[in-house]
Image 1 (cartoon, rainbow, N blue to C red):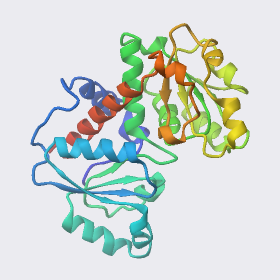
Image 2 (cartoon, rainbow, N blue to C red; image 1 turned 90 degrees about the vertical axis):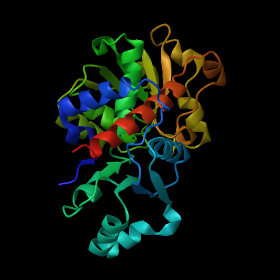
Image 3 (cartoon, helix red, strand yellow; image 1 turned 120 degrees about the horizontal axis):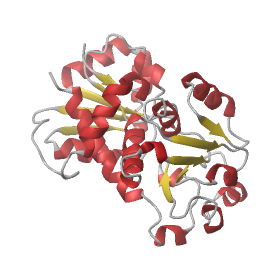
Length: 292
């Protein structure tokens, strides 16, 4: 059975820890190797996401593989829905693996006859690579002791939030979450309850940020301009966190809660470190998918 990576929970504790630690051990995130020589992958995006596309393409090319990008305008999602067995068979014949972005994990996991490696590049309900790479950021800043890491999530839910919640069962950090009133909080709270971890849900961004070392910005997709201004990460809001707290992007930066430019200019963000870690994690995941 070919390997697949769709969720953090699906990886399990031991493999999630192993992949993360091995990703940390890659000497240079942009190192070149020939592990994927003569392998070609189709990269299926159900919605545009330039940062994610650049990251996975860089990982494949730096490992000497080839990527064929298919965007939403190609209507591949409709073709798979109507002609599932034929499309999956064609992918198996032409390609050595498939990467999918923007599909819900049940849509990927229900296909029991997939006979090629599958990697979930993120969707609304899971983003395993982002969670592992962001936990790498926490470990670096907390000198490898995740028990001291306190994370705030403010803004709408995203796949990274769901995977961070799932990861909190395997990695001992604490998390405080504040979701806008115009989002569906129930499914997120039920998801956290199912994992039986110490995720705290707060009523206001100030409550979530208080005493935290890391502030992750969630989605602003459902917000109007005035709402985004009320939720933006300002110097005043960040002052409620622990001194020296760092800001992280919890989803595509184009869709994140706004962050004051002065915070980024002062070097209080971890955006570049997040990008570097995601490249490391994708490379390690690709190694694992093709290990015999």
